[in-house]
Length: 296
Image (cartoon, rainbow, N blue to C red):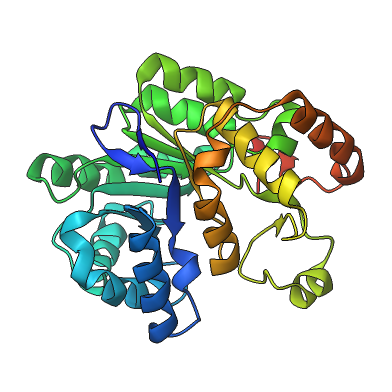
């Protein structure tokens, strides 16, 4: 699998990132198998969070033989320093490491999130200190609001941003374009999530009956290979440096197996295919309008 520069971080990353939810709830043996397969296929960046069930525990054990050869990213939904310090200590223990190559403020969405993180006693006090000490090598954030993302980038020189760079969101509202432009200007690494997503789940019953219950939104079905590849190409064309997989091994392995293909230019036929399909799914956006912009 081809490696790509993650902005100006100095990291060369395989085109597909291992999303920690892949290891969640499937047991240690399965996680070990998934990780060994991913290593064999050139994956070198692994992303996880405390909110992903037992993923830190399972992925942490699976990565022990490979830790020195891979990049490990973790996240936090804590906004205050005291809470974040406790959570970070636990994450480092579960993931059997003394540092994170990337540490991200997770799901930054509202002005309140920003105010707490950057206010007195906020998590950014911890982040800045531990980056200087080398415990957190690079610092980023994930966001479900482009407005929030752009505000954050005015407040601190973040190294990475994890954001939904999705074909439908772009066609529907142009979501992701301003962030991609900012990445060109500032040089942060842009990790595109939800590139394989078709639409929101219609309801809980649809999700429960699907093989993709670990995915927050509905991925394209495995039978829709042409749409899957086109959607991933679209995310790269939008400006993603690399793509983060949805939460199950079947979708992750598909992305890895087609990684080199999706780095090729989007064809006119693929554009027409996505345009035609957009009419079928536009009624099911997985972002909703809020006073602060678009949010999950």
